[in-house]
Length: 309
Image 1: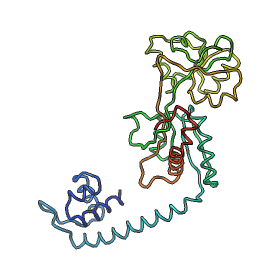
Image 2 (image 1 turned 90 degrees about the vertical axis):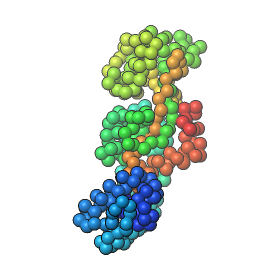
Image 3 (image 1 turned 180 degrees about the vertical axis):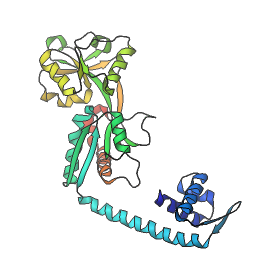
Image 4 (image 1 turned 45 degrees about the horizontal axis):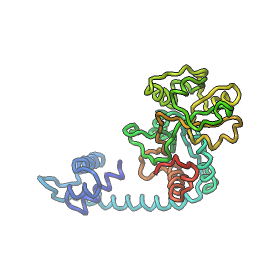
């Protein structure tokens, strides 16, 4: 907050008007005035001469403005220097990711290590609330999770793709002619699903509730989507997976994916990070890579028809 207070004070010294200074700083006039009052309290000196309008600065205030300009200039210089160092910086990136994003992660980790060989990446598979908490407490640098309007708290985000759900089935004669299947039909099959406590499972349960058809899963306590895939391969079960997992199905012989329809269920997935200024260096690495991928079309090519513009 201290840098922001100094920036508000500099703006007021140049605009000589609380309203114009607030507009320049993209805040309300009461917010700017309150911040400067807090600065006065912190420093223990009066800075602004106040009346019914702006009257100028005290002797102490003029000296504070001089120091404020020095401090902000030094901060800006530091940021430029750090920006240059980031081209070859080292450290640990703490990435919180939802399990369903697993197939996408190698695309990002490969790009990160290629551009910044000194960066080590620590991936933790977390739910939405754990990811938000980790970002807010700075235990995570960046997250990949569902982004829902009104549920991101104060976090920043970039859309990555729309997650569409498919039914994974054994590649047998029974499904040989099928490319899609309804949720009502899927409810009658030997399903194995994620644990009910997981958000991904709750999305599935809500889809079944919409059609008023609740299944009786064969396996209900797995917290691993890969464990569910193995059940389809070896136990004759079926399961529900994100459509982009089809890119990895060559590694899992004997299965095929059917589009789930009536209804089609989409969830928006995005990159999340804390709204710090400047952006935390490790978060900025992945943000930059995602923006480059979207601009070049590499992310679109990888995701096919699941990209979010």
